[in-house]
Length: 552
Image (cartoon, rainbow, N blue to C red; front, top):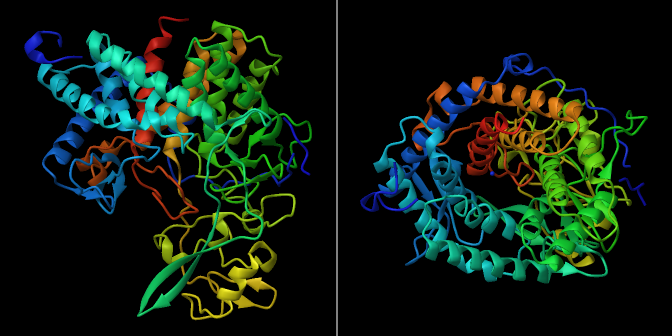
């Protein structure tokens, strides 16, 4: 086994958030390196807040007028409320209920209302509009507090209801109702905690291989079972849900959160091969607590540095440190403050070439192909990058350096799957099974000249928000200064080169703030586009930047 390491209505007069791989050789970015030297000022943060406010009013108007929108399946059903999520094919994609991203849209609206005094030109009528929409979408999320089939209740509830509680003009009735909903959500979330393993289970589903084949001239997909799938997956994203529990006075909830943080600390990190002194811990995306092996559903490979995953890791542990500084725990815990400092150093190290990262830090490395194709017995083995076929992604996108069809070892798939695949022809007009391998995307090199490895501005915004939040805690001056300097570099670069107003394209017209975010590249989803949670963390980072002047 791999080495472990670690506001109300206007009429009322109220208006006025060690596995070893080789060191990545990241290609030089075509973007300006302004962020490497420029300062990010309070004036720039104020301007960004005004821009975000204007953009989300634009988005509200688009959705209200039913223009430039694309609905997820099921959204047209009566009384179904769907939530703006991302730009998809030049339209605002509206996501159906129960998705992990649905808390971010009302969360953005509540954040804007809570910071209204810092936003220039925020009229009373605009505040009234945003308040009405925040309430509408918030009410639609209330049933989620009872849904025990997901670990994402922190994202869904705390990033929406929790943000609403920061709005000082909330009525006492709404405040009580929102508080009760959050408490019910906490009771639901802890049902996913396994006392013996000490962690909150992330997913109930198991991975399957989508076999792409042709039928009547169209490409279809059939899910195929694996021989040895994960059975108790915990993903690093889950660190972001712990604040939801730690914000409670209930000691049981807090103990569960700290237990999860401890287990993640012990099992969820590896070191790069060239990191001889093991200075820079890197978070796996996934760890299976039954087989005690790392795996992946995001990232270049089973053992890689998925960019947003490093942000979930850093931000999650910042909230752990903050909670412990507010009230210590009685259970023995690792030195989380030291861990956070090491995570800051790691991200600083990974961002040496460009402060806005590729979607995976290893995607442009010389051995990215080997990382993608790794099917080691020491890992969960199967990852979605193995069957990412070229017809699934835009022609200008290069997922990683050396991208090519991958041969999957037959032992990864169940005997039933192999029996079915033996009778099928792939979308590439070839047998799926060739010798001792399964070729889900054919055997021939992809005919594409793409060179653009997508960035992920959502990861960059997440880093900045976490770093500014860390800088407000009781930490060493050296770490505080380093965190602010790095966050300022990131925010200067995002402001200069990644705001939709810079080019004023379709994403600007739709109402998004940041472009070039990447959601789930291995699943061929939301690649090089605008996503609401990127805007959420960018908004938070600007707010936290302005709050620093009161805490230093």
